Amino acid sequence: MKSERYVSVWKILLYLIIGFYIYFLLSNILFKYVTPVGLFEDGRYFSRSINLIPFNDLFEGVYNKLDIFGNMILFIPFGLFLKILLPHNSFFKNIVSFSLVSFCFEALQYILAIGASDITDIIYNVIGGILGIGIYNLLKLIFRKEEITNKIIIVLGFIMMILVGVLLILLKVYN
Image (cartoon, rainbow, N blue to C red; front, top):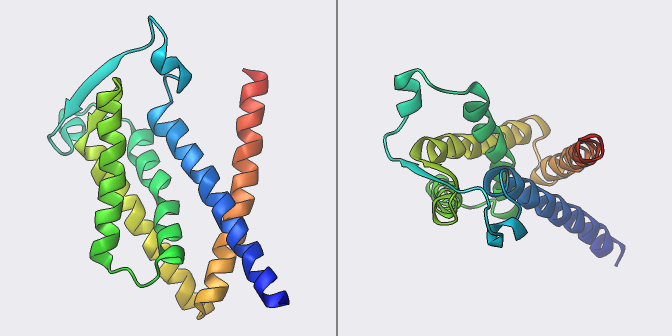
């Protein structure tokens, strides 16, 4: 009985962190220029563009390092969580998962006219997810057990959630 409760605490923490992560993704990808309620307001911000040429910004010399690394960093937790939730998924299935989620974000940006849809963002997001899997596998090599690796990721994720949450609150209060 005690071990069941112990396992459920880890699952609750994991789902709490994943919920926060989803909120953070939505805030930074879909709702960085307009709030969900703002989608239905008159005179709201509209921006709709599409780029189907991979790395076009790099070739033109007009790129933002924050966009490049930000897109990768945003999807690293996705790779970590996918390995915890679906440890036996093939590498190909994981790539498909990263690609589909990223594509949905880009498509929604276009459909809702809330940003630029860019194939390069999808590529960087997939790279971030792959990095997350790599980090998971490295931690598993170090700690040798899946259960210990998962718990370490959950604890670190919880700490990051608290730090980012406090930072977001401070930004709201002081801006």
